[in-house]
Length: 281
Ligand SMILES: [Zn+2]
Ligand SMILES: [Zn+2]
Image 1 (cartoon, protein in one colour):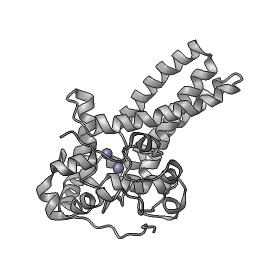
Image 2: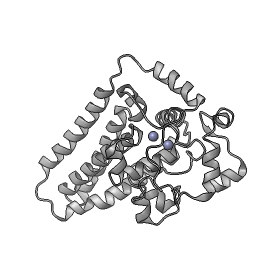
Image 3: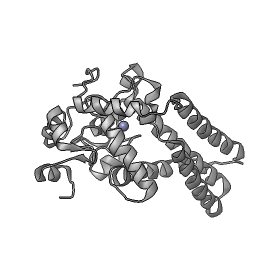
Image 4: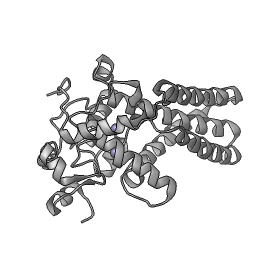
């Protein structure tokens, strides 16, 4: 069974949040400029590294462990920073923007945007790319000393490329449905995977990756009960959703429950629901 092309349904709670959020976006905000600068700077950084390579051979293989490590970093930051309040300035801001804003704006019954102004709620601010560039430079420098300069540049390119892929895949999760997001392998998988993550009942605990659901599969946080290949190429199939999650997913789609049992900090779960989700009680 595939379940794409479902009509989007917005609850009253979501409608209210969206109206208030859109109202407070600065009139000077330009969604195309926001992502244009991000993609331009990221692409130029990668291009610059390619011009610095001398003669890499086996060093290209470093892309594999660096990308896999990146997938786990994605998972860990999403689970432990974006969805857990760490009350330190920058980390609090990340939590605020994600749990208290992004997850109120989108739910699993309406996870789409219809204007470039809404890029504000989908894409990270520029400072995330800057922090990533600094971390990439430090790690790239260490790799260049420990291995060789080509290894350092390839590590840096992989990190920046991973970030741009993250933003692109996340955008593909929130655009209006189209041929590309419906049929492109991995993109269709992550779109369903992330839409499910936006269910207000399971959002704090399930489906934390945004590129490939590999780390979710390894860490047991996927909403699917499937093998690795099935999970990676699942597309929009909803047949393999863990049956124990279905009542929680259905419950938190109701407006009344959303009004009474969901706060800006996430859902108020019963002890049984917490146990099913593997949440601390
Ligand atoms: Zn999202
Ligand atoms: Zn999230």
